[in-house]
Image 1 (cartoon, helix red, strand yellow):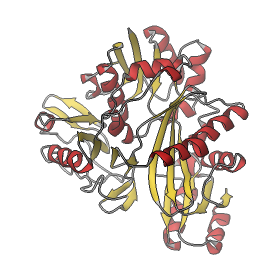
Image 2 (cartoon, rainbow, N blue to C red; image 1 turned 120 degrees about the vertical axis):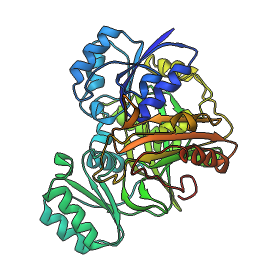
Image 3 (cartoon, rainbow, N blue to C red; image 1 turned 60 degrees about the horizontal axis):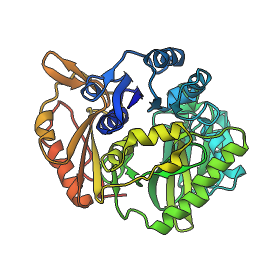
Image 4 (cartoon, rainbow, N blue to C red; image 1 turned 135 degrees about the vertical axis):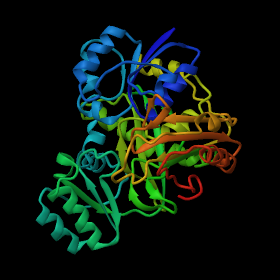
Length: 422
């Protein structure tokens, strides 16, 4: 039987732990550091996700058959390298390969070098003056990206020169995101529909996951500031089979081949954020791990043993796994704290969790909660991911929103159109 360790503490990690606990091949699931909510589905062990040496020591002590890494920062910091040097299996890319997410500029140059479809670039800037000057010579709208990881908040798509200037000031002058914003990338905005296309790979073999779509903006109708993600949908028929083949042949396979050619073979989850344009799929960004909240929507539809799949990826035998999916749809609605993605308060008591999960085909994943003597309370910006499955997106969404309506905490807000727009 497989023993699995999950690194992280958010909704994505809860979804992974939940699915692993349901896997017939898995006997033990640990989560480091986990959370009070994740503790319902895994044994949580104290650890810091920013201390990769400590995490390696923990894994050496627990001796899991594999470790799957949820968040990007430990991977960007070299966690997989630490584990590999100790002979421990880890589902996640090396520090060199994780640059696909760790640096937007590295990713853009990689895409251009290997001829993978992406948006044309206006320029790369490392001074405020150069960036401001560039805004005088672009065609609007434009996309401005901080080079480093910003928890999903380092990208602006805008048609407003004033908004662009203010964003550059936040990144480069005020250093709102620290070192991540000291260099920026400016590129053309693409038109089309966004798609999250995630695969699991052992470096050679590819296991495509069910396509999904994230909703980044804070408010209905894709309005408001970017967030870490306010909800996601996955459904049969989101893209035709021919388009999936095109994505695999023109994006995924060239990316893996390119990383190997460049001396940084890629192992783990590869998230391809795509724009489906009139000219075909083009890469908006890469993530070096499962998306959040896409993960919640995807695992709800999995009809195969996730433990076996991750074990096979760690053994470079992913070709023996066949992904099967519930012929349905899933919707994840994120319940957020008041003020998110800006300033928000925590410690707000949460009610209605059991009532929400009493509905059929509904699971509530904990993203930012903690247990108090009076029950669960809020402990983050994104608090819960109410996830439901149904025969179609409408049915799944209706269940998710029915469950969400039973949950209460002060300041709670969520989008009412997940799966309906974009």
